Amino acid sequence: MTEFKTSGDCASVIHIADEVVSVIAGAAAMDADGTVVPLSMLGKKSYGKGVKVSITDNKAVIDININVKFGFKIQHVAEEVQKNVKNAVETMTALEVTEVNVFVVGVDFDKKKHDDSEAEDAV
Image (cartoon, rainbow, N blue to C red; front, side, top):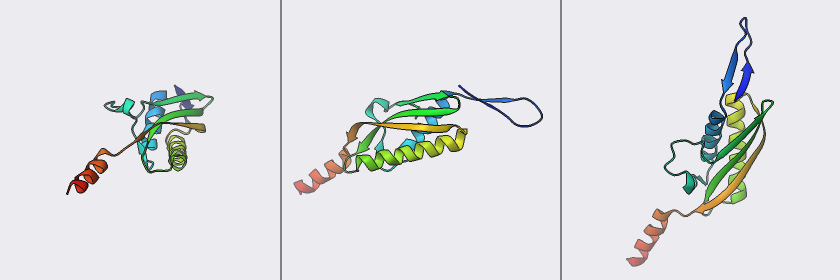
């Protein structure tokens, strides 16, 4: 859990759970073109699944698992995920993100696209 002291007249502290940072990172990753939720995450209610966050001294290291859609350049997708995650977490939490490690765990083939082409071949 991350603590931030608030400024002002009263001494207050804001706590941000690591799970909140995981959800922010997961949602930001899925906004990148070419990313798909890994099969291991399907049916899960949280974007935070498949995301590991380590926070020390208000600095975050984020590990995230993604699938890439077939036809997209893996390096470009991973770089966009890194940029999106770093921006979202730093903007929403005031943490400094020092690393975003992207693990591509699979390639997603769009079954609908393949089914449509097979239907066209049959005609």
